[in-house]
Length: 89
Figure 1 (cartoon, helix red, strand yellow):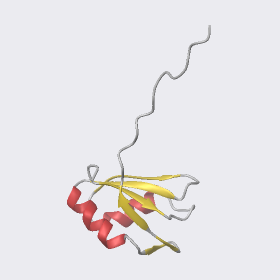
Figure 2 (cartoon, one colour; figure 1 turned 120 degrees about the vertical axis):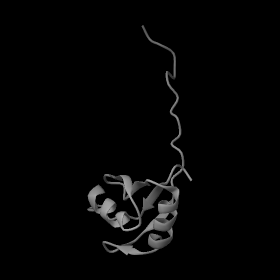
Figure 3 (tube, rainbow, N blue to C red; figure 1 turned 60 degrees about the vertical axis):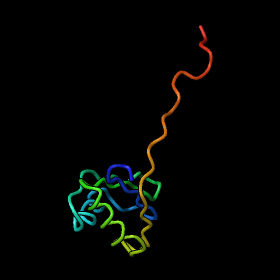
Figure 4 (cartoon, rainbow, N blue to C red; figure 1 turned 30 degrees about the vertical axis):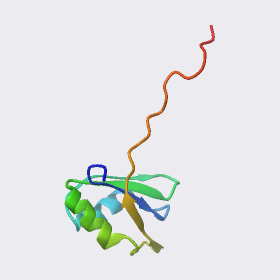
């Protein structure tokens, strides 16, 4: 797992980061919670890996705001190549 960071999928488009934080706070201290606007998913980072595992087990497949949550370990973000093509002068 990536430092207690979880992917939270199948969110309703009206769900906020604050709602996500409140939901996960029942299972431990939340370091960060953010929803990717207009995408239906977000990320929650728990303070400890144990808290993240507990939250994942408790909330995966549960209904929240009318949708069934899909929770998984967040994958590390891919580095985007810099520079790219030839320079134009």
